[in-house]
Length: 353
Ligand code: NAD
Image 1: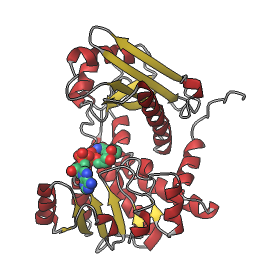
Image 2 (image 1 turned 120 degrees about the vertical axis):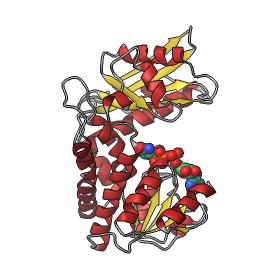
Image 3 (image 1 turned 30 degrees about the vertical axis):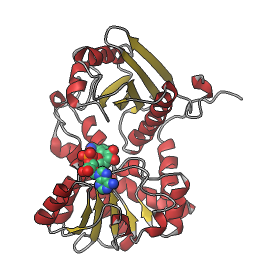
Image 4 (image 1 turned 180 degrees about the horizontal axis):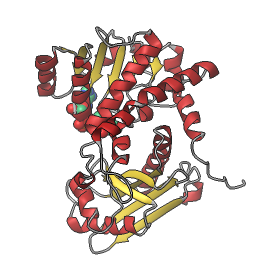
């Protein structure tokens, strides 16, 4: 299928296919919209079943970055890249250097960072060939997870204030699904703010640590979405909000870091119909990219953690604006977020049919 007729095309500005015979690199870089600035987005390495699947993934992901950067009010556009191949067996320095040259060929219209299957060290290898890398220690921002958790924490505070009229989190019950890099950091912030934690993870050791450290109550990973709480915070998998799970929720608010939480677009409407306030995932989990936007780079001041984290905390205000708009327009918060983002970038001029 040609790119222009692809269902996920959505007016992408540029789609670049790269091949390097020596290293075996096969990659696609997609730039969705750069009206706000150069595209910033991760590079994913995945053993796609077909080239078509890789194209679909990169187009979807790069469009998502346009919306995420716009709502976080960053001077960046949306782009993403994928390397086709098994991250467990096909990685080499030559491969990532070849990817770095491909990124460099865009002359700065795209800045690459890590994503699933690509580590910070891999991005550093790309950085041997191009200056247009982000999210590496040299920039000062480091691991994005604490910043992501800080954004989710402020998103939960704003959601609790909006929905329940409570200005602090003392005694508020939060069910955290997934105790990885973000989930653990989030639990620490919530505990310090006086919230009661209910947790689940498929790794028993992570659950035990949460019970011992924060007095959390443990629940089975398959049941935690049913916990009777004020907040359910998905911090593990995508598509956790679907036609099976939404009717089973027993919370007032869903607010967590996981990407692509809604199984389908209609699940946003189903949450609204049940009176559950949903913090759109790409808004509440933007802390990592906001932090990266503060990295030291030519023409910008040195990275300042306090300034970066203060910017991340403004996620709470963005959510409040989305909630107010959704209420006024009687639409799901997921759609109100999309509409607000679209006001903040210039859409591509669509081809006449
Ligand atoms: P991670 O891999 O460190 O942690 C994920 C955790 O979820 C692991 O502890 C894993 O054991 C657990 N898990 C997996 N399946 C589970 C299940 N069925 N039930 C309960 N727990 C389960 O990932 P992370 O960096 O903490 O990210 C968490 C989520 O947030 C992911 O969806 C990620 O895409 C998203 N996200 C992360 C960042 C970031 O800065 N790290 C930024 C934006 C979005």
